[in-house]
Image (cartoon, rainbow, N blue to C red; front, side, top):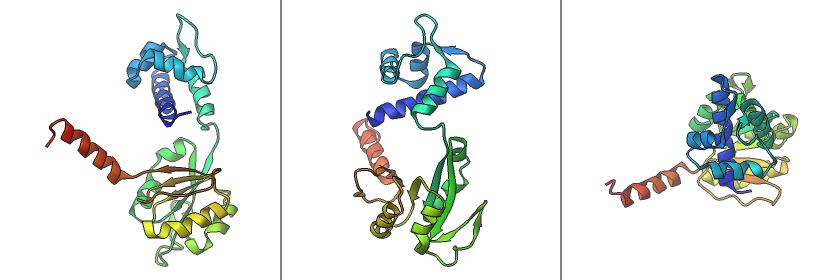
Length: 206
């Protein structure tokens, strides 16, 4: 399944949750498409990948479809997350309350700075990165978020994989090479800005 499809499913879920909170019981594919900026045909195609939802002429039952999408997206469970890097990005991510709401619980934060090790972030004691593998195993970490300098990534990456983690969100500006059973998602903000710069330059945004 393509990444664009997964993103649309996530978007559908947010719309369903928002409309459900507003007391809406059903949505048609046309209404869901309008609110997500796609087409009704695309909505039906995306959802048909996972089964039959909704009834012709009646639309989709909002609570039921939202529940189905949570299960499809793996959001019907709690994912245990470790932040590797206690700098500004790591701190901002830790403070963001939306992760826990979506089922992502930050259970560990690690850093190499002795001045930070042992400090308390919320209900988490910041650990020394030298204990990385032990912390990952002790906390049964599912996902690691890397917010460390690019030059530190290769060594840390090997240790993360050795620690049994199979999901990595990478904020470092470097491409990661991992085994086939490990999934990596990159967040390259500068590259996104460069893409935006290109788009603006093509439309006379100088």
